[in-house]
Image 1 (cartoon, helix red, strand yellow):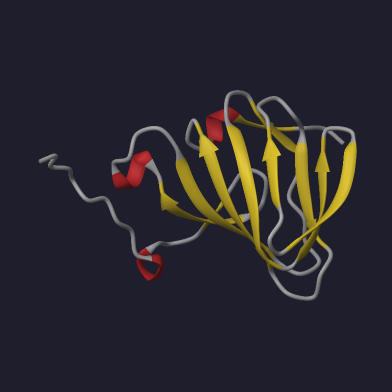
Image 2 (image 1 turned 30 degrees about the vertical axis):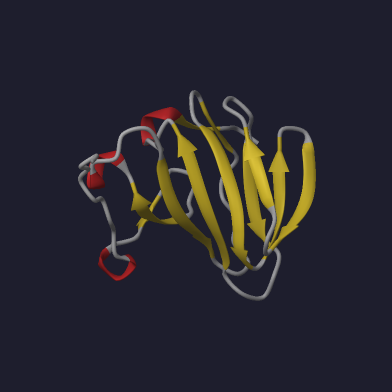
Length: 126
């Protein structure tokens, strides 16, 4: 029998914070907080009429899963609409941002490997 430590977080106990790119984040699972090792999982919220700053990650690959709302995604030189149920891969070193173009908060589930860090994030000039 394999014994393992159960790592569980509770949404209501997680305090949101603002990332370097300007989104509101709740770290649902992050090594610095929960003790997992290789990745992070967060909920990002972009309020109505708002957008994140254009940025890139040096090492992290991200996957965005749109939970709610509608957005305009910039990924490298491409711009395209995203909506509830869409999944987007964001490779390392690729500048990206997302704008809420809907009438409800844009909620995104963000998986990052290696885990998200401010040090791995560079804000880009327009």
